[in-house]
Amino acid sequence: MQAKRIRVLLATLLIGAVFTGCASQVTPNEPVEDPPLPPAWMDDGVLKILTIGNSFSDDAMEYVWQIADDLGVEVSLGNLYIGGCTLATHAANAKANKGAYDYRTNTSGTWSTIANYKISDAITSQDWDFISLQQASGSSGMADTYNSDLNFLIDYVNALKPENAEIVWHMTWAYQQSSTHNEFPKYNRDQMTMYDAIVSAVETKVLDTEIYTVIPNGTAIQNARSSYLGDTLNRDGYHLDYYIGRYVAGITLFSKLSEVDVSGLAWKPANVDDNMKKVAIESAKNAIKTPFKVTPSKYDAEPALDIDLSKYVKLDLEIIPFAFYDSTVSGEYCLPRRGVSGLSQNYFTTRIFAKDELPVGTIITVESGWQYRPDAWVSLARQTGTRPGNISTRYVEITDDWWSNYNYRAFNVSKIGTPSLVGSEDDAEKALTIYVPKSAANEFDATDYTLLDLELQKFAFYNSTESTAPNSSANNSNQFYCSKRFTKAELPVGSVIILEYGWQYRPEAWRTEGVEASRPDNVKEHRVDVTEQWWGDCIYRAFNLSSVGGCTLRDVDNVMQNVLKIYVPKSGK
Image (cartoon, rainbow, N blue to C red; front, top):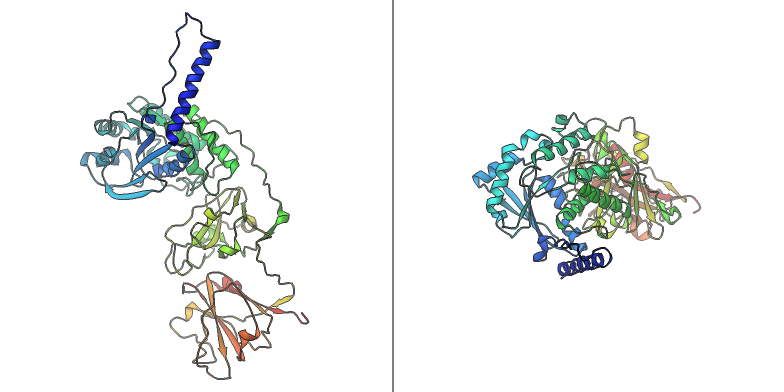
């Protein structure tokens, strides 16, 4: 119904324009030109697009359904995917009729995948309006890699495609200037050299074929880079980031093929604000208008952050230098990797935050030239399947969509391009700021308390059913730190125990000077207040600290000092 409304509206506007023109400009002796016909895809009201591509077609297609749906257009999308696939490989697969692809489809807003799919089966599976070809990114500016492979694929698709389907070319983008991609040296590691080479290859090798039109994503991305966003649209130096980069590409692809005006687009991905949306729409429209030349953005000045800080509390991020989380790594997902050599030197990270600590309405800001990965866990007892991408968006407001199905987040902070942060420690400490609404802030005011010295012992734990002394010789001792034993006088009623998320402690307990018959359970609560009931009839308490996932606690001495904090009321309070 939405697509039909667009067709009716378009026809009405066209007819109105014709009659208006006749009344004001046309004389009886002048021929009247027929109005332009609606795009052919409108015949059945569904825009059907198949891309024969790789990860760059994944990037460009990711948000097309949402963009189309917002603008009232029904779409059916297909993407034949092999990572890094070249024209030569596509041609070889077609000649062998090889089921080598992941075939990804989307007709309702969700992508589904069928493995081991053939190009021929995808082409004949639907009455496509457009079938897209593209070169692999590293070869996209190498004109001599097109030639016979491109000509063969055009002939191959023409032989199988629906009669009215058009073959189009997806022009991809140049790498980020700081990219470490192993094919970037082909372009002297220079972004504009690569962009110019891509444009030249398309103009000399694509435009004189039977290709119907070019989707100018290479230019759209370059246009966006001329805005205040700068060179921040990639997640790894070559793929587009999951937010604004993919948004620009999706708008460009949809707008070019549908011929629908995207000026009124309302939908945008999480972490894309209204200013960024303006850049995305502008970049796409300018690329479609001038596909082989960069059009500088009028949004070249970074918008001022409009935040009333009096309504927020600045969160203590408890920055850990030269460390990062990887929530996908089994066995170590809940611990930061540390060190001033190797990959760790490129990152600073924060402690882990639970959902209630970063409520909806929280503001995340990052300094220009910096990025952060909001690493995420559903449960701290197991690793995550996929990680969120890096974000360089200056200002992000946390929403329910931002949290998605995750319950915990931590932030790996790095410079764009991820160079070493040695020598940039002060800037790294200040690169990320998080503001929590005062109405939702759950801060502990330590003004009237004294921080207790836990006297932590490394690689040791108590078992109050066996001994009054810590065990440091067991096989699993390296999974624990433990405190000294405390009396009730040292840890009085009114004390507050604060535990970081991702960790747990067992508050070992003794009712006599000797061995006990049972042990308390592990505690994962963020805050526990010491009460008479908490002490019960115990005369000693001690704390075994461990990660929720049972990780080996290697190289975490500085981290452990902040995992458990116990605040004792000051005298007289």
